[in-house]
Length: 161
Image (cartoon, rainbow, N blue to C red; front, side, top):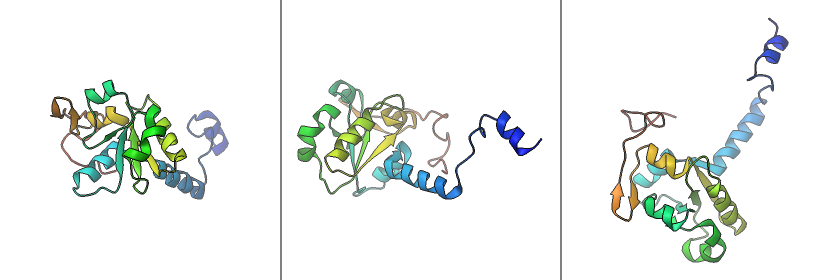
């Protein structure tokens, strides 16, 4: 089979991969806009100042169900009136919402960026924070659930990626 036949029949290669330089630029840009829950957790667990603030953009009811320890509670609708009071503009911000099916963290990141904050979105949101077995806070105190083996290594602290 020639390359044209394989490409036409293969849904993965129907649209050719980008040139390496274009791919590198794209993936570099993606990392400028996103951080994953595991990297955020590692930076927070290292102790000291992680160099960023974490913002939970969900409602008070959602915050009360659980949130990342040390996060600032700043629902997206309140960002225009409260961000300047709650956040230091010189410190990058990582936003999160419920999970990958929710674009609340994206809306919060946009609102903060429009106010002049440097911002990234935490991929997976609170759902993946919990699913990966990281400690979270509720009104009752700190909790932790076992890591879901589909989202985190079962017997290691680092996935190796």
